[in-house]
Length: 159
Image 1 (tube, one colour):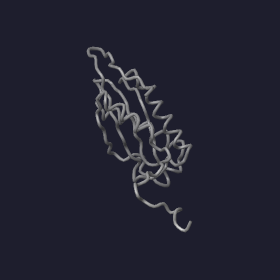
Image 2 (tube, helix red, strand yellow):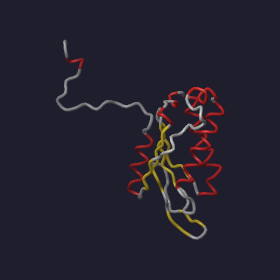
Image 3 (tube, helix red, strand yellow):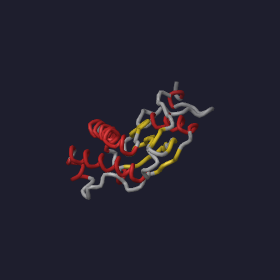
Image 4 (cartoon, helix red, strand yellow):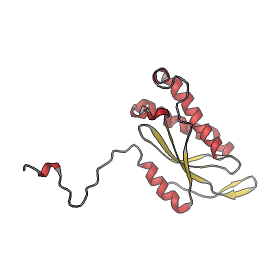
């Protein structure tokens, strides 16, 4: 793991607040199958980190995007609610992606909402952070099917 996670010093506190979140595109449309949309979304999330990092202590530690949902591990400051961080991330991304790709708005997101309003989060301790980072990093990667012990393969028939 090459991500450095440390306690942060804030104006009147010292600590570490890390969460693994995931959130889905509205109606689970697979818009991130398009490489340009995927790249724009990732840049938007990084832009939010740059713009709000100092103000809310936001650091994106790992990000993985699959065809229709996002997984992210981030750290943020104690003066900001996780709902505010999610609003910043999802709001900016939606605005920028739909502005750059207006056909998405007319085809699927005519109400102007790209994200499902829900999100899932787990606060993580230092032990769980390593697992969460590894899991998130694998999002969107090609999956290799696992072999089941004793299971015959299709190519073993008729040989």
